[in-house]
Length: 341
Ligand code: 5AD
Image (tube, rainbow, N blue to C red; front, side, top):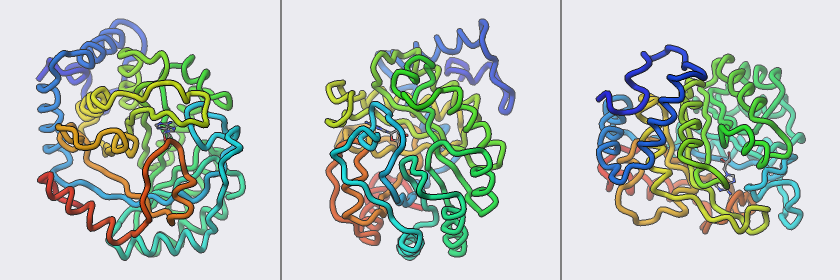
């Protein structure tokens, strides 16, 4: 299987070679694979590696979007603070815990608590929410952006199991041009801290950003591997009309699936979600994402009135019904020959 990227060079757990010939070769190799005319052999290999390492279960995870306030100005995101047309909301801790209970009753065993970067919620407040939800036995994932290291440590001590913080793009210049409020270096250092604290660590990136090439995506994939990510969300960019990138075309679903397949080969045991943005664009196409290496899907449990305001990118959203939506998704997963979990 040596023709597939990266696997011939490193044993599991060995550090990534940085710089130099090896890395260059690997970036080129991955870029070459991404550009293949016929990718079917790589998809088949990713599907085999997925089955061998994580089996046929598709994990269904609840996501509660508890605040759309954000201090950042990310140029692709509808929640960026310059979007003054957006009505902002905050869900209070008691309602967060109550929603998590409803998700538990509907069969969810993991909940992702996600928000913009909102200083209203102190680590203490979030810590109490985590402790309450942990009483159900659910795994708790946090996704609240860049925090001081002490807060990551405190929340971990409160029982948070996982943290999601996508690196968005591994190209330093592109990162800076898209994020007036941050640097790639800082993002990566947060991810290393998160990993060091023992969180199951999730990163990820977007496909279709301005100026991105196959080589950029290759570096994104290698960064996931270097960080030894436990999870990676790879999704197509979807333009939002109230952002500076409103006129930039959406990312390719095919290229997204190729990147997911290569992520599966580079990180055989990782949890790889079918991202929501892929679901927005990729309806009824052949080659479903769970046959390209993905093994996780998230469902919003955010109450309807708030869900519509958590508009990172435009999407058609129905009313939230935690129980029936989960049942529906389970049926869809079974129809694909997989086991909902
Ligand atoms: N299109 C697709 N994905 C986006 N995200 C943010 N804005 C967009 C967009 N316009 C993704 C980022 C972020 C996650 C919460 O949503 O990767 O980490």
